[in-house]
Amino acid sequence: MSRLADIARGVRARKTVDLPLPGLDEPVKVAVRPLNGLELSDVLAKAHAFAEQKGRKDAKPGDRILDMGEMAATLSIGAEDSDKPGVPFFASFDEVLELDAESIALLYEEQQAWQEHCAPRRNRMSGPEYWTLLFRAAATEEGGEENPFAGLRRTLLESFALTTARQLSNALMRSSPSSSANEAAPSSSSSESKLDPQAQKA
Image 1 (cartoon, rainbow, N blue to C red):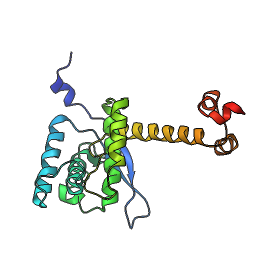
Image 2: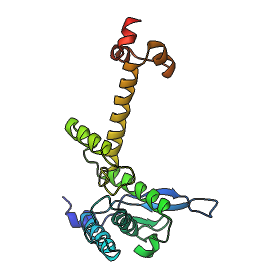
Image 3: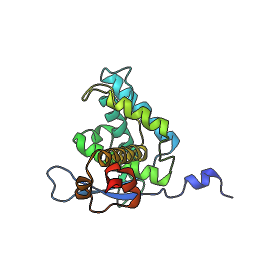
Image 4: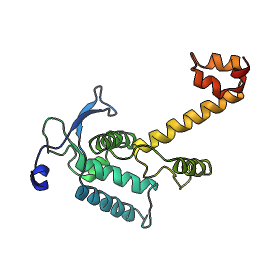
């Protein structure tokens, strides 16, 4: 059986993605790879040091400066030259920050999605977790400091969004006349019809 040290020396999983940049006609090719525990620890330490440097000593997940620092620190390690495995795409943490915020967020999302693909974790919320997050989000002021989704992994965000969409869809079907429901959806299953009291009368 191989030792962990031997496995760690192997080639890490990489995925090449497109990074559109302002002023360029064609997107840039960048390879993203997952981070290990030591690298993630370095990322978190760098992000907090960056936030403290910017006057946000007690910043928590959801703070825009802390989040920007975490994204930049992640990409300074987890983004590589698409043609040269192991060679960082960015020369430094500061070079990542020279990109516009949208490009940083886009590439970070690509890296996080690949991280979860390579190391899958729980990707669905329990009922209590869903309702707790829903009520927190509903009570959050738009544009405020608190972000109820801060630190939530992409797969859990997708689970929350899909569940909310289903809840809204079912609520609309229950409150709409059968004719409106039929016009809103190109087709409906028998299970959907059972959810709509008006449809049951039809």
